Amino acid sequence: MFGSKAPRPRRTNGKIQDPLRARVKPIPEPSSEELAKEDTTRSDLAAGGTPEAGRTTLDEARRKGPVGWLQLLGPGLITGASDDDPSGIGTYTQVGSHFGYGLLWTAFFTFPLMSAVQELCARVALQTGVGLGISLRRKFPTWLVGLAVAGLLAANTFNVGADIGAVAAGGELLSAGLVKTIWLIIPVAALILSLQFLVSYATIFKIFKWLTLVLFAYVITAFFAHPQLVAVVKATFVPHLELSKDFIMALVAVLGTTISPYLFFWQASSEVDELRAAGATTPLTGRRGLRLKELQAARLDIFIGMAFSNLVMYFIILTSAAVLHAHGKTNVETASQAAAALAPLAGPFAFVLFSLGMIGSGLLGIPILAASASYALKEFLGLRGDLASKPRYRPTFYIMLAAATTAGVVMNFMHLDPIRALFVTAVINGIVAPPLLILIILLGADRGIMKRHASGRLSLALTCLAAGLMALAAIAMFGTMLAGG
Image (cartoon, rainbow, N blue to C red; front, side, top):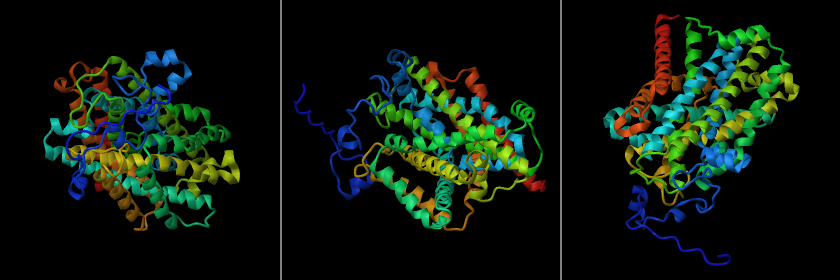
């Protein structure tokens, strides 16, 4: 009733479920209301959903109209937006400038593959109610999962470092060189850690998602650049391949930055967080089974998110090819050179659009990179914690976050070229992804775990194709490097 006092949150029995906090100062495990950074009674924190799942179903979206369709978008959209992080922007720009339209076909080719991969990760999470780290540890030997998680941690740490450097480079470009990149490294990291420690990722997404819309400037610029229509259509639908070291490395980089291993864990953990917000699952134990309506909603969310990601990818490559490669600028080594791709639209202010896009995508993507590594490690170790929890109750999880970000900061003081580091990061992701993806495919096909929601023929075909092609590309890259080709 209006004006009545809200009931006091009930404490759970037992000591706090965090080894560090329990060792320093044992206190009772908090209630879900006390644990959350934000008021979990607010209906807008979850994706809008039902008691059975923390997301809006298709029926509810149709009934609510435009608002309902917006509520339907959740983990899939965030994953798609974060996929176009600075590593993606830098990689696609370098690929377009160096090879022209040669790799334009990869945007359409990877769309069904990455959609199938992310759908698989979401389906496993919705079926089991726990993150990928826990599910993988239950099915496979600990040492094998440990190696996969270690590879993810290494790739993510390098990716965090490269993205922090890129955000700082964007800041230098925006200040017209008055503020140097190296001066901004620590402030950028401090800002990201402050956001992670003080607010939930839902709030971070609301703050920075609009900056990522600047990336649509590449879509507009493509028309201003007047690309060769026949060449673009041919490059889009007819795959072009070269058996050279540079081309194969570029292909590995494109696959690695598009189908990135950190997105596997982030998609699954986001779905679990949605379920937990709705009270449909518990940490470490999970749930049994999922409703078809939940899965349909998740699939549409993922489809839209991946479409957004690949659309941006396509036009970054197209614009870079039409503006840079066509005019003989085939080697992008600095942020200012990369920004030149937007010159036909913004002229002398191209650096502003590029900088805003780099900064916005970095501030959106870096928390996901650090968090996905922390989610994977804490699930592997059987710990608790997420971005929705207060640091005072889950300090171990937040120390993992801080460690990943700090390692990225240290990397930037080793005099790495920010733009080149973004490309190298994509290559590393392309190497780490295949073995991890194979484990996830085997998990999704296990009828003992997935029941009637085990992967069907289409899912198996697409996910196996993704893993196989990424593995083949990585092997070919090492082969050409050894052969000196």
